[in-house]
Length: 238
Image (cartoon, rainbow, N blue to C red; front, side, top):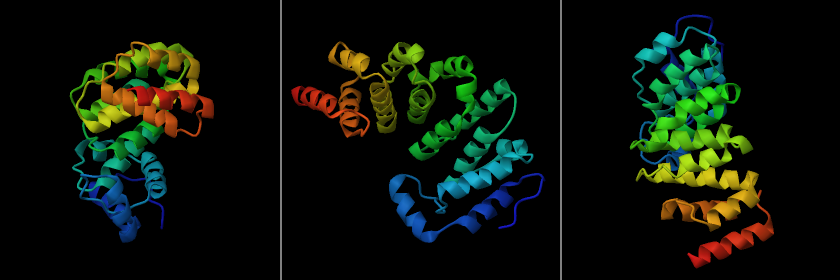
């Protein structure tokens, strides 16, 4: 497909590009993975990433600000364009704050978090930015905070502070709790000895999050066989 020349981006233009990339058979498959999303065109993620990289080199801000997404892929591409864009870090965080309000499923949330590499460059700025989202009553705001931790802050200097933040997620939404459990399991992979001691003690996690954390640890191919045996025994004891 011919690459888009440097020009102003419009919603109609982006929507048509996505429609041209859509695969009906993939739509049926992907719709099963993102429950609750009805308007899915069926565009594979690598193709959306390629389109987003292209758009990020254009004048995308007005399109982003005025967007009224109809399709799941439109929101995904907007998040990717923002993540790939080159701009002042503080200005970018203003856009991130705006975009978080448009996250309504785990796929957009997790893909955006993983792609937002500025968090690796500006660690303290992003660490401070995330602070209020752990207490959010919005399901995907809380998941965003948890997934940002596991994508960008699995480091010794953040470990204890990160656990304290994950304990604050008391949002009732399934995907918020699963985000916290996933983050706990990723920290366990990186720091098995310390995390085992934590999970054996007064961990402070909600029961659902605690048990899902143990489950995800046992499912990880990066956890040793002996450690999985210990975790399975903890699960059985309840």
